[in-house]
Amino acid sequence: MSTDHMAALAVPAMRGRLSPASVLADYWTLTKPDVNLLILITAAAGFCLAPPIHLVGFPVLLLVHTLAGTLLIASGTATLNQYVERRFDAQMRRTKRRPLAAGRIEPLRALWFGIALSVSGAIYLAAAVNLLASLLAVLTLLSYLLLYTPLKRKTPLCTLAGAFPGAAPPLIGWAAASGTLSLEAWVLYGLVFLWQFPHFMAIAWIYREDYVRAGYLVLPHGERRNSLMTLQAVLPSFGLIALSFAPMLLGKAGLFYTAGALYFSICFLYYGLQLTLHKTNVAARRLLLASILYLPAVFGLMVLNRM
Figure 1 (cartoon, rainbow, N blue to C red):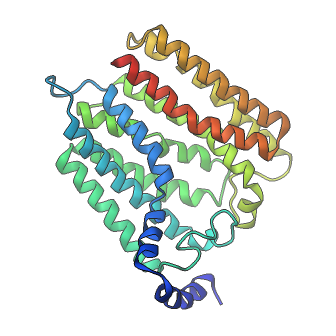
Figure 2 (tube, rainbow, N blue to C red):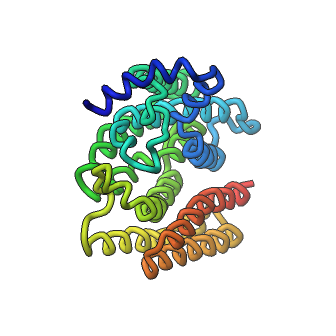
Figure 3 (tube, rainbow, N blue to C red):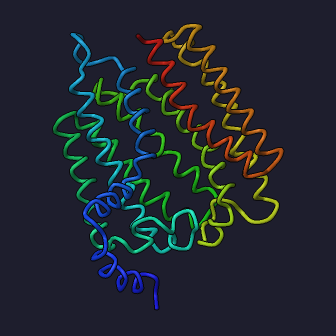
């Protein structure tokens, strides 16, 4: 009997025992609110750093519309991703308690929930913000679901494929505020693009056995696994150090931002090196924590410098 069939048999009985609050909590969990928080932080930073279309006052309402639309489409993407991967999530200790994997939500309901969120987010951004922001958000959704998600089971290069849509939130924010994309916007994109490699390598190392159990190839087998982990945990951090100087070279930041970004980037590199040297879950968790703190810190410095 297939995993989907067993889940389908279990869902009606489970749903009858769940309270409305539990059902709402499960749908909220489907949207991956912890991931969405970082998405909104980087989108908001891109918005605040962009030259605004309207020069009188800060466009607070436009920022709210941008974040609302981005949240809707990001939530839809997360839900649809879990719909696609529900059978594999059920095989991993880390994800087997997710609502779809555990059978607490019917797959068809989750599918329509994800579609509704995604479509409403795209329409909302187009109507309340601008067409460019909406287009970028839709391209992010499509490339994440149609490129990155299937590649996770085929090649360790999936991290590279996933980094392209994963770095889009600051572009969406920038496009929302200015209606266009400039070189400075692509610097923000580059920061998030490079940041993702050490961040995901920390996760991949902690849950490497889980990924193997579910048939994911986020890390290769044998000695190549250590080599790829070292490459992706360390080399992009050197790129982040170099990019720390870009805003100053473009005349958009001073010594305050540059010194702070350089410090955080060196710290990030340090934890990446610790993982490659020790190859332990403790070192991976420290790198993961450093990665979670890195983006808000660096983007926060940029916004403070702009103010």
